[in-house]
Image 1: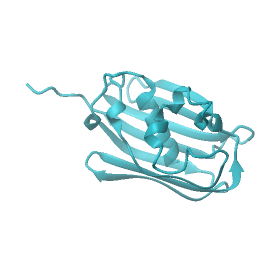
Image 2 (image 1 turned 30 degrees about the vertical axis):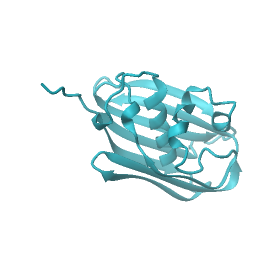
Image 3 (image 1 turned 180 degrees about the horizontal axis):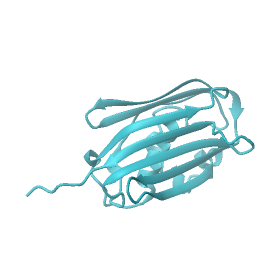
Length: 184
């Protein structure tokens, strides 16, 4: 689920295609909540680690005993607090998203930042050990469009063919964007 959250954060941060970005020192992740279907995602790990004052790492691991080739990935970004609102709500077929043909979609903008931190994007269907380890949350791509305040990123993996409402993997990442103070 940490993977999902990582994906969500990366996607949201790059979705806006804006060259005017907020300094990464102005963004702070505060919490990561993960829920996984332990009958499908065995021996799982999902955690957020504060390494230095402003560096966070996400670790995600899951062992899929059976192949997962019908996954839908949904990403939502909400501003929370007074005047709460949904900013992004996008859903895509995960296998198509990570394939060469699917690389034009909005949700694939996170791929370059995730590659090299595990095998989550290397194959589809997902089977065996799937990992995203020590993924540094680089907030240098947060656009100015995210005004100071508190935000919640939700990443969800569901089976296309499942009748259950329960997601296979769900991750909630909470973060804050602080005001930028100019030196006089």
